[in-house]
Length: 229
Image (cartoon, rainbow, N blue to C red; front, side, top):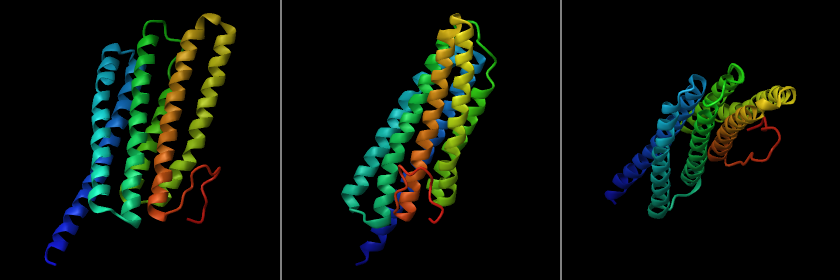
């Protein structure tokens, strides 16, 4: 009977460590995206190559968090809230790994764009990147704090990112129509806006899972997050 409190403390320590690792991975992915956008704006090929090389760190974190979650499930057979926490961490981990892939994709397009004259000054793309990075950061803070209101704000912010992507798309279509020689450059910029939109989608997925973790209710596939949570 004396051993149980020790086991419980160790288990709680492991859950705290799981949260810390998810937050650490999220912070690294945020930096990858910020660095990728800076490499794009500065037309810095060497920096883009370094960011691509660092993707293996995201992959390693992904594997380690997966293994930790599976170990916790196997050894402790958690129920209710703890089970939701661990399964949420698994899903968040997958979204973060895919968001990290978007940073790599941005760098690949940045390297291609660096070989041609710049189509136009980058104004909307950095703005879009800041919005998506803030969404990602807020979604992770919502996870750590178990903050449903913050998670719902992230879900609602996704519409603004979608609107900005559509604005960028319309503007670049006009460039392509007026001058067919801009098509390859414009398409690469459109791809980058799509990568950023995907990061926002991953942040939204994370936030939806936070709501499930805290409330035990799924809000996935709803057009509007409910106001009565």
